[in-house]
Image 1 (tube, rainbow over the protein chains, first blue to last red):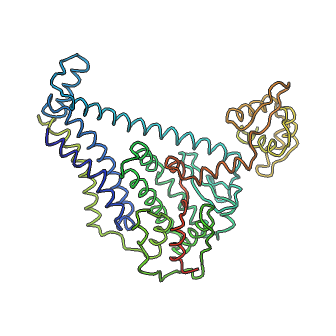
Image 2: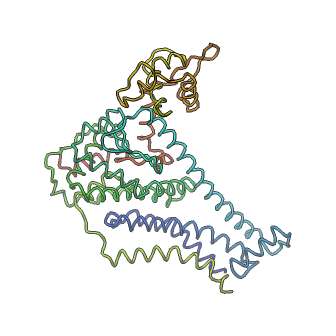
Length: 329
Length: 128
């Protein structure tokens, strides 16, 4: 019981600080974005679980041999006025902290969901009035804006992909197709659920390094996943050109003109790729392009399996530590 | 019968195009005359449009904060709260804004590009 709480605390700290920093600096996620995405999810879930679990187990230590008997004893104190003299100040403190943290996480998750839904509804209402349907199929609309902008607004059956007039004018048909496939991949792979979960995670614990790093990495990884879908039907050069045109015409970007001379762009400077991750400011667009320019082979199957095993272990270990002693005893 | 959504759109188009506030009656007459290039159908369907339908549409738009009513006059005169351009700007602000809690609302093809990134992009894409 005692050691369990220490172990969970160490796990929680590792998952809150050094592990996410290492993972955010690693180069391999760009090679197997899906595997990396699973690992981030496992880190976030296991981190939360071990944080709450550590406090719970520590707090219940005097009243139960394991989590389940401890919880039973606690329920007795709360509901049947059993004596609480066994619990010291720090135990009660830890239990309160565990309860508060749990409530805070759940509440933030729901609040973020509500806020996102409200903003999406408002956005959709305005789109209904301002955008005109596009020839590119149902669920695609065109907005009368000069700068090249493309985005998708998730919402189940009412999901919509929005393109601007500026984008339609700037892109060739194949490039436009690449953009549409990319955006549809976000919708069909339900990336908005990941965005929601990690936005809530960050909103709940903004001071924890892991939440910012996780959100930035997840934002980046879903773009890579969507790029990979686009690459199945469109050529690499087409996608790169589309990214570069949209990035250079984006109003937030400084007035940079990019050269699109050679469409193949085969010989990127070998010293460049991956150089963007070093400063800590993960540049999503730049890392996407460098990934396309100098593709690395996906991780070998054995390594991918190892990462998946780590994911399972991360989730199974705290769960087992919390539940198994109680179930056996 | 045109759907409420199409009518909302048609009414907003009229209010955005017109300079001054209009009554439901005026709007109904305008809807009856106009043919809309985008959907073609709403125009002639407008002939048998009831004023109550227009009022329903206006109250829906009012609830959404898109239309406001001039108090004190009878019949009520309605006007758009902001221009079409302002609403488009509102959308773009949401799309381009990068506040952490906004990032999850929608997924952009290209997120905001920093100076560093633009530099890297330029290098990667063969010197400009």
